[in-house]
Amino acid sequence: VARSHAEFDVGLIIMDNRFQQFVKQRTVSLGTRKRNGSWVATPVNIAVDDDHAYFRTYSSSGKSKRLRNFAEIEIAPSTVQGRATGPYVSAFARLLTGDESRHAATLLSRKYPFLHGVLVPLFHRMRGQTTEHYRVTTHRES
Image (cartoon, rainbow, N blue to C red; front, side, top):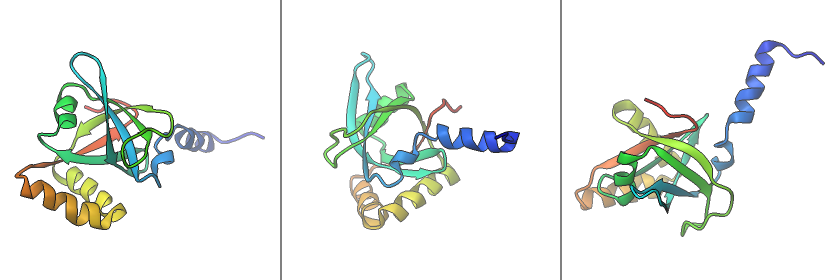
């Protein structure tokens, strides 16, 4: 059966969307690289939107500091404690600002209404921390 060019492109987009496995996933293991090249895995909540995902952390967290040096990350489905329950997917994280950051916050608070709509922002404010939102993609963004 011959397929049109448009049908073929749509099929490629769907097949290449590695984040679909995380749509219903509550927690993922986020691997970030240290300067010495070793990886550190920490659990984070994730929200998927189309072909990318979002997570948040506070500005002085270890993962935030590591992400300032290396955009390369790995994510895998995990338990709440962060134990990976599936294979890691290589990806890149980019710090968001402005409207993009607000969009990420909205998606996270929709998926986790009490946790990310109330508790996490309150916790960050109480600690005097700035909340950082990151966009996860399968390719490096500028």
